[in-house]
Image (cartoon, rainbow, N blue to C red):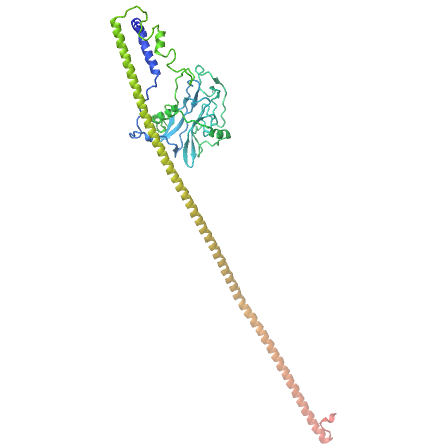
Length: 474
């Protein structure tokens, strides 16, 4: 009689529990089946190209929602805060999650939206030895906008700050307490940097130095969270209005340090054999638990049937696993195609953006040239106007001079006439004086002639009487 038969024969309830436990333990050793496909939001696009992420938006992302951080599942996990991502259907919330660090010493720099040239551009997060610049956004839980205050690495162990991190010391033992003071708290819960209402802070030298270090991209688990959120319509802002139903991922405590050799299902209490030994069962190779005791044909038949059923279950499970692998391969291929199409679309968008930017630059240069031409034309018009004004002033001055000249001409004529009159008067006076002098001369001559005549007359009288001539007076 085998150990399995004795368990079924003596303890049927324990046997049922054992089968259930064995089934669950066996299921834990394999990757759980993928979640059912989300409803298509793109009208049945098989490649889900419209679900591909976009890294630019004409509108700002919504404010950060308020949510509670789940406890850390185990050592070595770092908190990756939630954020608003975007595809062609709008913004959707990627839940915050505890993510196993890709290597010891790795710290997560969250991504952020930043305002550049009228658009909001996405700056992806990365793993690195130091926390870089993430827009100064206060994501909470240690990400205050500058660095990370939720813990630090010491050799290959990560120590958690319980003041800002939800840690259960039953599962995580590397803890400490240090209060974190955040100055200038912005209660608007702004989720983007720059722009008219975004966070206004520049990167400091430490953040700039961290930007130039060697970085690692998001892990596969992180990319899975983004894909799941982008496929869940309830995570979109137009549906939840800033209150996503899954704001964070609640992890199951594992009670082990990630990266160690101990895995679920490999311990003494997780395998089927361990359960059998715990229940007092014997070996599972079909040998009798107590040699020398014969097995009945009915028991042997039941064992063979049970083994056949186990083999069939195992084959079904293997077939299911192969189907899952193929399904995952197809999904991965579809995701790769979608990503390829998204990259091509992004390249086309970038090319179009570059063309638009070149057109804008050309238009700006054309406008500058036109403005320069207008300025030159205005300058020429002003210069012509100044010349016209100068000529007008010259004409007016000339007219004033002519008017003054014309006004002086009558005066000059009057003066000339006055002078002419004066000269005429002087000439008349001179002529008058000359006539008077002539008259005087004539009178004098007349008087002289008269005297001569009298003298002659007297002379003639004296000659006749005395015998003296005309000069007898001498």
